[in-house]
Image 1 (cartoon, helix red, strand yellow):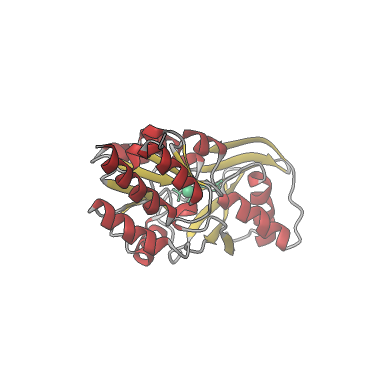
Image 2: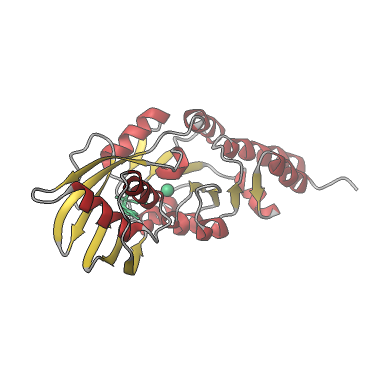
Length: 274
Ligand code: ADP
Ligand code: MG
């Protein structure tokens, strides 16, 4: 027997490095009328680096970085990995942590070297020039800030353009990051609609607002939005386990352009079904 169109589309998507979990998931990809993309790990590569350590007056840069790395050591967030890598690169010992807690879309806290260390998003828009900024608070006192930067995926602009053409709608950037860091990435990939400083539940609200929406994301913070989406797509390499399990579609090969490609495959298959 010849394979039903949606199943051969799934096989075809597999050859392009995309895991589509069911025939319904394959069908829904082509029904999408609006696309919402996460920033870190989705439009960017997801391997950020610390570009500056800025201790508050009276604090030492290495101490701030080492304490932050201690608190982040158990986090799987790309920012956490950047902070731990920066500490090791400077030859600092990463102290052990106790009582680690992560709050998706916000940051982490832990006891490190007998101190309560919190590494989180800033309360207000940071001064920094389009970087991600996290603040380090030690025993309730502001101890410093870290600037962190991530490279764009080489195919991000092209993928955004293809998604706009396929859906006829402007893609939206949804991010927990600050306004300026979001605006900078948006400008570089040609996105005009940006929502910044969103918590995971704000991403869900933004997804529910419009036409059938595809969400493309990678982090634990994206899992609720992926679940709420008409089609939830996870970037596989940077993706957290929860995100990969929640998604309808997993991009295994690390290319964003695979997303418009499978939307196109779905559209073709659905035309054959009808
Ligand atoms: P995005 O939507 O870009 O993937 P997140 O929702 O994961 O970003 O995070 C939003 C913001 O919360 C980050 O820019 C950062 O300031 C802060 N944050 C999240 N996780 C961490 C962490 N593990 N350590 C420090 N800060 C964090
Ligand atoms: Mg992300």
